[in-house]
Image 1: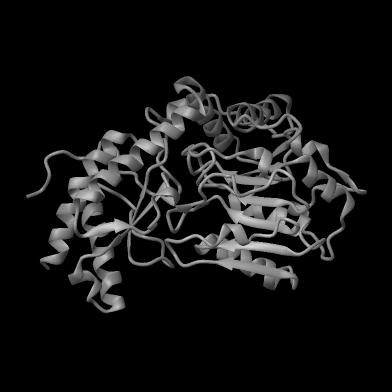
Image 2: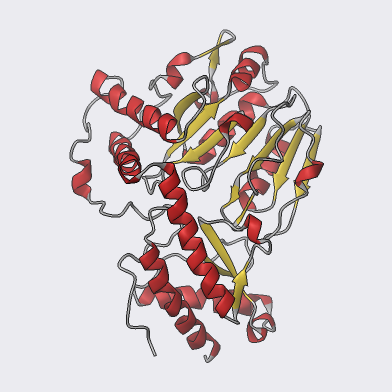
Length: 382
């Protein structure tokens, strides 16, 4: 029988993610629409995003922070194109986004002194094999595999190369030690539940020194340029964005950051996300048809929670039949208005992916779980 209780909010997408609890369009009435982003009030609002982000994330004071175009992807590409090439590069890739950065570094930047560290979906590469005398590029959390690195102890404090970290589905929901990272990127549409299209870029003093000393052996598009005449363009890190930002999206980001402050800061966000993972873990332990894609509990993401179907009936199907069956679960739940957009990523093994970030209420996760069992039984019985 169908479960009686439904989630109050069925938004479990892994990006764009659910808005914060209590959000409404009325929260954006103060947006500086029709104003130049160069005007004093608009720059003040952009600076508020930078300042609140810095404070909430307990970022070192000498780290620079900027709002950049094209979401997290733009921020990552900006760093790769501007910083890589001085020395050899280590790239960690265990899901689609890390593999995308590996492809870009190899085929677009043409870097030949390249050492990939790869693993299948659900696993991590051997972190002990990474050479930090070289530049290291990695994702903190694999959004499409549900696998995160187990903290930052594997990154040495003293290192010769730079560490470039795509932290888009980790920052604000996991402990991210900025002092071990030279470049950190993310976007508002993940843990903050903000609007898409804008990225955040953080640079350590070591990254700034590289930018000012090293000239990449490639032309840089305008939106990637962070130096002029061998000097950092300081305005980029003082709310003078490269291109025109959406002041409506900026207002939404400010609203989300103020909410984070009101509920207790990043520690509260981490606790909310971990509680969502704990609820799903308890359910998985009691179910016989599903398991985590991440085999090691220490590497299971608390945001992009990826699940694989292990029932013998399912595993005995042909590959295209497994994909169709998994998709049907999502379609059933969508048609019931219970869960939207919870299918696994297109390149990942067929299964489910439930966003457990801090904007998702634990009560909604708890209400969802019986519906997953219901939908599975419907699909299995045909």
